[in-house]
Amino acid sequence: MSKECISTERAPKAIGPYSQAIKANGFIFVSGQLPMDPALGKMPEKIEDQAKQSMENLAAIIREAGSDLNRVVKTTIFLTNLDDFQTVNEVYGQYFSGNFPARSTVQVAKLPLGAHVEIEAIVIV
Image (cartoon, rainbow, N blue to C red; front, side, top):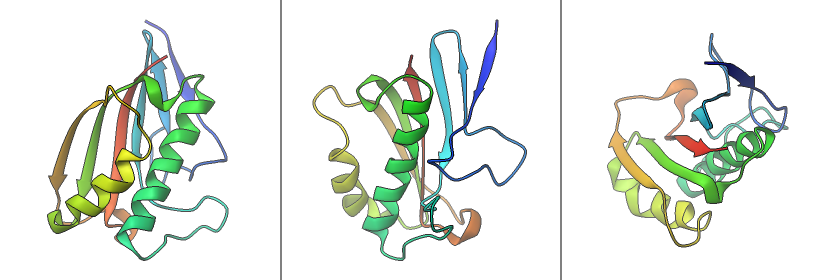
């Protein structure tokens, strides 16, 4: 099995010893994307803006790997407050059309850098 590290400047750099994504065996495994704006180096405050930025980061990495959001098969959303579920759901839904990916959403105690949302994905190349 061969694997390729995927990296783009259009998404935040990894904040630890991991890759933005790995392409292997016809899939792209995208690491959880915090809502960090790669150009400004900071996160928006409102949950809907954080969800949008996380999705934009996810999309940029997927494009860099040679695929697109229509080929996402599974996502996981991590929220620090499950009361934000509906708001994040509305933003998330704007990025997909029909045939939505499988998804899990979980509440976590804390996310890196004080983020309120993080989104990861598995994508077909």
